[in-house]
Image (cartoon, rainbow, N blue to C red; front, top):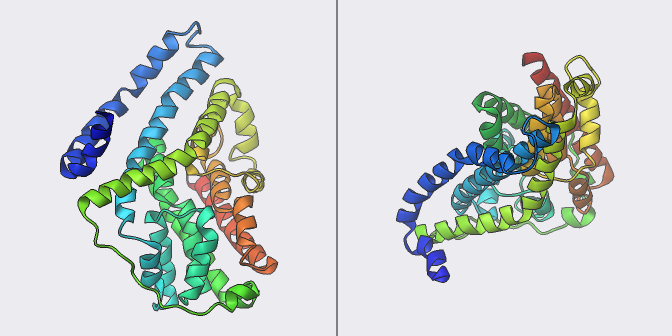
Length: 345
């Protein structure tokens, strides 16, 4: 019986795709009353610090998981059209300026993160993709991906989501362009520069709707299956901040009046290792306690785009000077985003 239920979406993809959004919406609308009911069932005062922290955790955990599961499934189907081979083929052979802008936008809809950095970098170099284009894609893919944008839209509204999208793409495009202008191909590791060039092909794309539906489920198993511990940890930290950290403390440390708050947030964020799904609940709690939006987003972007593990992974293919240029250019872009957000909002 369970096996038949699991097979039903693949065997009836059209019916599943019609019913799934209705079930998802019904579950999403029940989150607030369900979280309040859970807190009221516990021997805890709702107005207490612990009550506020528990309600935050009980509400945000299923909310983030629902948002993440829905968008990862949809993007998993879309990503079945964007294999690594097709991505390389789209970028190879175009003028550098056009390809750099395309690469940043492809980063939004392609499911690649820091763990994919080395094989993607090698594939791009082998296909003759310029460094400017490669770095634009590698910056945009983790920082301005579908998960980050969906959670930002869902938790903060469309205005902040659109602003983040625009500034994040600008950072990826400008950082890639600047790295390209520095002409640092000589600072690739020797074994990378000496690899034989290959022609970029588009790969296999003739999939049925059933196969694309299964690709959506596979993406959920792969991505949500990996990131849910980070989500729980991020929401738990956010719940503690929400329930116990005084508002005036966060305002003094991460508020607009502290000019040093944005660079400090970037410095703190780089050594950390998590993804958008894990860091956004923390950002939500920081903002609720008085942190400035630009400072909080600079912290988030540094964690996602400049994490120490990603830098260590990239060291396999880049020499130290090129890594330093990459970190410096991206950090400058993130600082600019932080100060712009603080000035505008």
